[in-house]
Image (cartoon, rainbow, N blue to C red; front, side, top):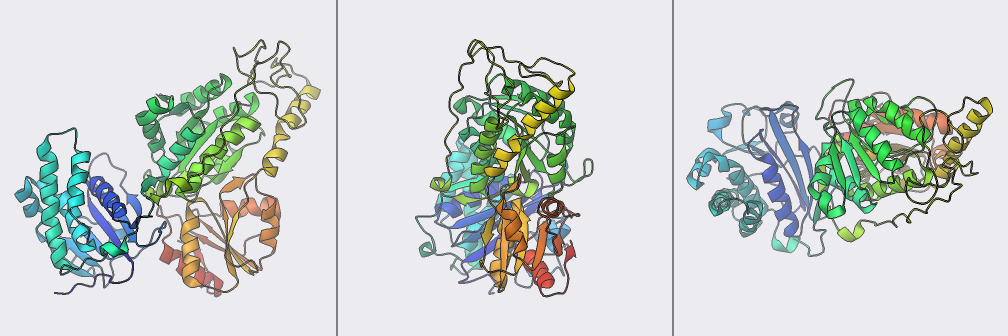
Length: 581
């Protein structure tokens, strides 16, 4: 039988679905490594349910001969390792989707779902290789066989992956993978979807997810103090630093709660450390008083806020862009801050460094906004494309007459730390004078508040400009920020509409001075955001006076796909309306 695999298209998308505990992540890691080592590009996106045990998890792998960095609905191959395939995956099954599954496990669950079902005895093949536990390696082998990737690479991978275990563990995984590979080869009649000549030796070999990109950027900026109370989807940064703390000279503290995390970071910044706090929306809400403390103490603190749907616990392992206003307005009183929202692995690495630079220069909080989709997605990059910024200069010793909050025209007082020099470094949560002493003086209050707020002038002058993709002479403009950028960029490239451009923001506060004129040049503006109220569109209107004419919002807990974004834009820009999803 001939199956409807994509041929000569240079791209294939595979989704692997299975119950928690079946080793989906091991399959994902192995396939990603072997795909890239074969000279191909990959983009991966992971979904998992908010359960301690049970539930159905999945991973999507988009494999291509050219760079890919966005989620698509298209599903060429579905490997269903266990029953209870989630509805959002079932809905993506199309007429040409090849479904690989074990009928003994799935029963009639996927009958009538569409696509072409291939019954493969995964459990039997795994048992013959050493045990049912190796069914994930059988599944990985099937995908490798379909793709046309040499299974010998898998043996090397397993030897490294399980180097700390008995040799037979790697051997049995390799045997299971080889058994699956033979099945996959038969399905494509020995002609894999990608031949060796498809690959390129110049492909980026580093596979990095969003969470690790932020972590590496923080390390590059000299971050040496990390605090957090674990909270999905932000815990990856804490875990990454904990694993590599010894190599970068960092102290990592899992605190008893978020209040302790932010207050320890403020104290560490006062003492001269370069701290980062990582959390999600609920944890950030608890940190509001500590963020305000950082504002008045003028402490250079960086916070990684990885967004998920709310209110309250919401959907702990899903994605949304609904904490922009929380990040912008949290903390009582008025004080400056900088907000960044990376849209790519490369920019996450750079923006983390920029957040540390700005936090230190302007002695104020800087917040990096990601989301579940971004931190759990990955693709291959070239290490040389990761921009390494210049590190901070060593701190100066304080003179005997040092005043921590000296009233400077820039708003930035000379930064000193206790014990470095002869000066006394004051700090207080109350309003204070230039030395840090507390006084209830109305003229002093105004003088110090004006000093702090003057920092915004310098921060605005150094703000990163939004990126414009598409024609310079546009009359219609799509505006997005953060993780939606690559998705809508690809969607617009598919539509190829005349006079339509994309304006992509990765610094969302303060806004670059070019934003207003770029917005005013458009007759129609589509705000594309992962929330239900258009928070960024509201921010743009408040500070530029330009109102979006149309909107595409998604707040189901899932990210936009490229096809969904293209469909929505086509409807909006053709006058058929857009809206919420």
